[in-house]
Image (cartoon, rainbow, N blue to C red; front, top):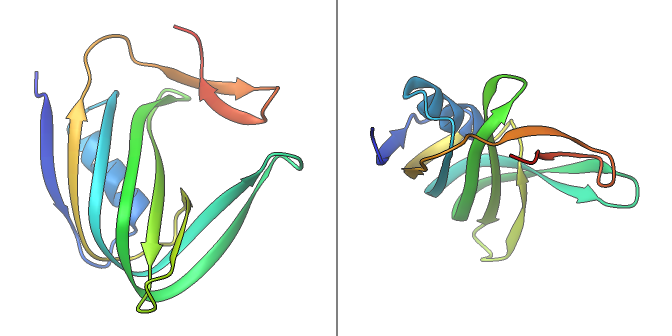
Length: 136
């Protein structure tokens, strides 16, 4: 069993899709990861806990990825990546939130750690309106 891996993600690819592809290629269903690099632009979300919806905002680039962390589990029988990201522009102001599709990579390096044991599955959690890990 592989316990971890490093991957350089392809320039121009969508960041969330590229991260997901790396885990799917390796059939890794339970992991934690971190990532550094830069983006051409970014889309990140903030979950409004009162309205129970994500609000998304697009940021023009170039952008530095200050931090990107996340986990891998299973949702609807598929490998599912959940990531949060902090970005900054040339003004050094940081913005962060839920990584969404629509963030093209300039350069990105992924460091992942596969975790042993039962694979958590995401299911709808009525009190929060989110798809969270179900009890296992």
